Length: 444
Image (cartoon, rainbow, N blue to C red; front, top):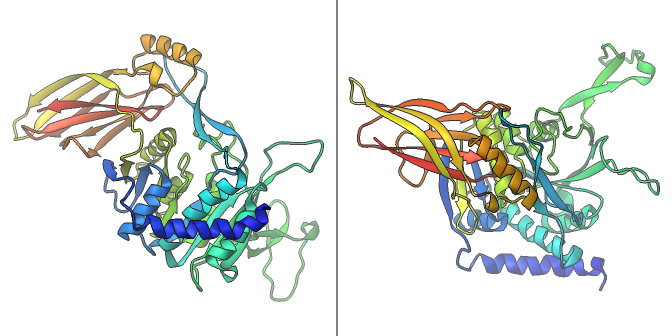
């Protein structure tokens, strides 16, 4: 049977699985692990996005509340993707360490890929607000099949735009035109959807004035232009190797691209979601633009990038972990701790971090790189530390960050002072560049 003829079966099988799964016992529980600041509805979730979507729909926690869902799933590329883990040390020069990010290979072929995505799209539809929309980011490999499926799930009349992201980077072939764009499918949840038609410059021919009656014209260093509604072709550069926003995570999307989508399709205060979060571009941009966010990924490395990125922005969020997810807490933390009662009822704690111990054999890197990391840790016991946090009243389950200290290039702050009450359980939590962590209890 041809793939085109299989599309109705794929959609019907996914509808049946969607209905069946909602009546079954929940496959995974999600536990609050960390809280940064006053989190509100901002959430990062480590776990299978299908489990999280089922959880949301089953418990009606976000039903018809999300204003925009942006998803950047695998592209059916047939490749395995790596992330560059950046390790900085004042004592030794380190090259980028390559670690597995995610796999985009499907043993059941295109049918398997489309089934994976279709089932998740069914859940996402339930979460969209009446005036909300969904944007699915793909490329030439599968976008035409997904367009047909989206027409079936959302309705042809709910299709708003085929948005083209045009960029300079990418492969060049001598046997075809260079592939220099991705395609974003934009659909509305209902008959009405929020959209702010932002303006952009449109330069006049030869950059000269038209002087048409009733048409406002402007001039800059290039020449004359008018302001027109933004077009559906977005010229945005990829994240370059030297870009400030580069995290090293595979297939990272530029903040400017997401910024255009959010400023056009959402309002300040709206809830935005990405269920294939990767390095966390959507939550980072949402926070900067005054939107709320929800971001889910099953990669520990992806969540490490998300958390570091948002922590550096001083963003507030809750971090939830699936009972099925591998959440590596095997590391050990060593620090010098001084506890001193002061004149009031509070206690002053002084902490100096001096060692972070993690078994290199557990790290998702090659044997050669494991050996290099052992040598590095012998010279610099804090080399793997990305950032660390303080909870002045730790309950043993949910770590509430009240102070945090992040590495800037090779510099890592190692000293902290904080006040807490007597007979409390304070703690520090140290995260490494691979997403693992260790906790040191401080009994006051």
